[in-house]
Length: 145
Image (cartoon, rainbow, N blue to C red; front, top):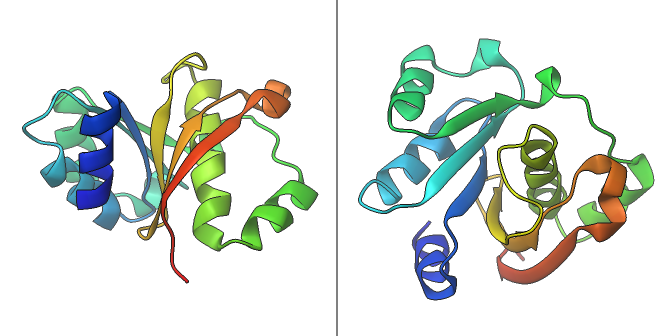
């Protein structure tokens, strides 16, 4: 999270998209970016597995929380398999800003930092799924070996 915060400051990025199924990574991101003007967009899988108190706290502070099961988007299996060759986190880090853009929560004209899983972060210019070929991975901040 420290690397992400530092890189967001260096690049002037104001939107960080975070994958968080049960709230662990969302809580860490919330704490890390508490004293900044960065907006978090948390992308979970389903509402039933995400803590309701954390959901309320994030929304109260002006952050976004969305769930992939509540969003219509396409992410071809062949593309997912290719990104998984790097790591599962890279696959997720590409997917979640697309979901956020699909919902209109991040702009497709500005770079965001995307945290896939808890160990992978990319700088991405997102796209919606119908314009997937316009998505640009600008930088790999970190990923596991």
